[in-house]
Picture (cartoon, rainbow, N blue to C red):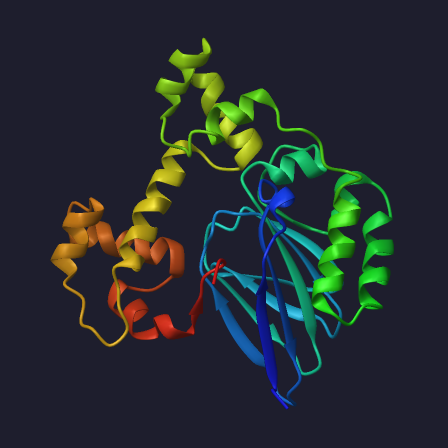
Length: 261
């Protein structure tokens, strides 16, 4: 029997604007399993169907995931420990979907989702999901539930998202007859990060995408291709996002998980 199960569950086409994917994991062994997740600049909603799951975000240790938790946006690496007998299902919100779901501006949330909307509906949903063994059927139930709460995308969010984040705030402001400040505030409101933050993150993503296991990196090439001024600039980003130097990350990258993988 496989002792640790993990899988990425695809999103039906009609939900691709809301979720990027779902993730399921179960630790069937007798020992805890530690996992490291790279930042993805997405908000997540996690359901835990076993013992509490200890969680560290960046350099901070939080209370364990008990049953249901929302966290986001995930801007730094996260470490969690799956105890023996644990099962989790994680929904990864895409773009402005958190706002569309909860109707609240994005910020650094780490809480029970029922506290965000002052109901017990997520506690009831957890009970239903806990009674379903098949992860695919759990996702179907979660999507049915989501359809009751999801709102349409605001035009202000669409102005930012639907061009693939290719336009900067000034360009969006000119196209939509808004002030640049309004566009910047909308980034924070609907997405939970600024345009400057996402540009920095995309540069870091490009850098780690150039690192191949077993092949010594050409750090000067990485810096040139990704727009880093010098080595200290590169080190600063790696330390910020994953808490380690580029060299150490390259050596340990096989144990780091990306949200989409």
